[in-house]
Length: 615
Image (cartoon, rainbow, N blue to C red; front, top):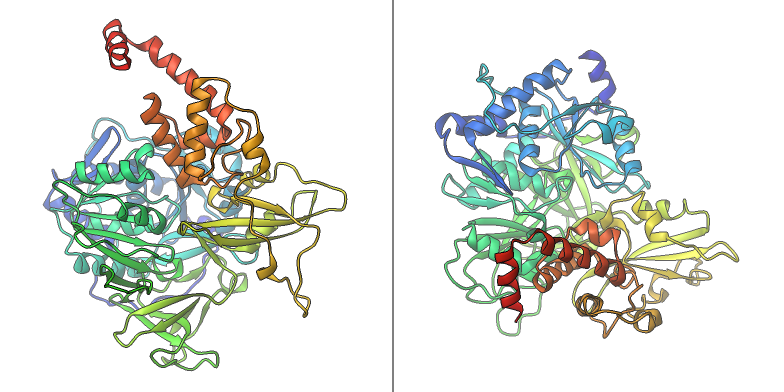
């Protein structure tokens, strides 16, 4: 084990944590003892009780321990099944280690960097083969249909200074950086959540967030620690607002989280019937919409950097009063978290004075993987408490007289796109590995519909025309970091002082001539698919060979495209299919293939019934 610890290269430090809080894994284990038959996890095709969750985690923890897992050792988890992920996370804790959640769809180069950077000695995946070349030893893991044999129950160490998890975020140096969170900070988040939203065994909560996004931490652990059941939808439901609303109602969920852009779309829908939802939690981006009066649930806006353990401030959002135009606030500090605003001189700002939001207290991360030698970040000595630390968020805020914070934007160039933190430097560094790109600039543009889209401005090498920039980036960065549009410039516009004049950068074209003038549809299927895609992109029409993403599409619109094709043709597509077949022509070919297969697999009665419905 000592060699594994030496490999992990994790930094030292600790957060100020209330000593009486139980750890989250201890709370989950307590639920398994008190309510073994109660539902813990529900997902597509599978359910687990608390007893089953604990038993499966116990069995896998023994295997992890034999493989060398131990205190503060990061164990990478790259499982596609949400239920298997939660079991593996808990097993890592039972083995005394920390988990590193990975999205299996992340580009290989980025995954390889993350695994090298944190020194993870073990990687848990469904199968060994796809991961064998990335470095760590691979432990295959799949949930067996039968309960594992009873094992001596171990009680998780209640030491709150242990490392709980590591999550990688976009880095300003052009490389992602890992944030280390201890059990004490997670316990503080869980205790606040359970108190603030009165979460208990009768509650049914949602799991929608990407596993590599820290909101998933917030979805999973406060719910299970309180004895609530956690429910995961299938991929076709996850980001389609209407389908998601229907799922939330049908599953009688009581507390749900949705990233800001998705939450705004949910707020715009009609909610009728017997709705059990009490709270819709949101965060990750600027909230532009207030709830309409009469919604059956309360909307809660939340704010927090990964370095502050998901949530630092939170507040209920009331319906807009007559004539009110101000954006919703980001609320007040949650339990155990200290907030204060520093002005440009580093002094405490007065109420109403804008400045940088700083955090202290129990929510602070231990630090970054590699420590301050490689990542200074925003951690600094606390200006008002001797011997303590603070985190400078880089966010500009103003504290109102009622104590709530107004978010005013970033002090630096960091962007938020669909809830994900994006460092422009990382996008630009990946772009400039293309042989035909001389320089680049990534920027966010807010469209008329309030959607924030990432745009890349590219200056090519003289006489060159860069090709396949989107494909080039997809092999290097996650999908949320791939710009929706690319704008080619001969040179960047400059201010009189010689800096890039961002205000003079041209807006990306919403409709290119090729979008309207490309090859027209050649069949009824192509016509229907093209019309659906054009409607989502707010275009009159599109050419059959035009790339959906090049015309302004993104993953959220991609899921809506899938839902509308499903309604039109009665088939199920995956979001990966849209990424792999992003033109109307290629997507139509896949639709026709699936429709033919569906017909071939039909019984005579089903075919006759379908013919009757179409007639």
